[in-house]
Length: 120
Image 1 (cartoon, rainbow, N blue to C red):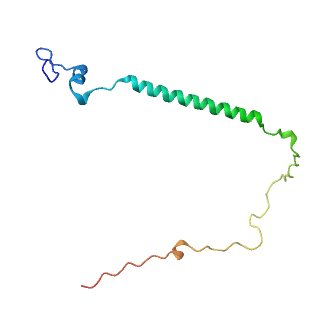
Image 2 (tube, rainbow, N blue to C red; image 1 turned 90 degrees about the vertical axis):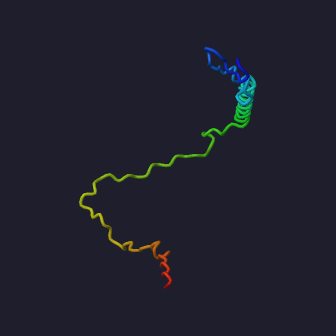
């Protein structure tokens, strides 16, 4: 094996271990600290979620909603329905028509005229 981490002779392959051990930029980070950080973050999220759930449960139990039967609500009768057919009735009702035309956007914002090219 030469100083660059390559094996010499019949086996010219370089393993990741020898490359990581000899080349400073190719070193792999240890997986242990990353796993610990991930475990701490997940554990903290679970603890905070459990605390929030417990506080929400206590809030509902200490101040429950009023029961619907306690309110002064009386149902109203349904409106009367007319059943029948529209045969023989005119679809156009007599009376004033709606002939109002709102102003168009073109009238509110007219097209700008392009400036004329200067004479040479």
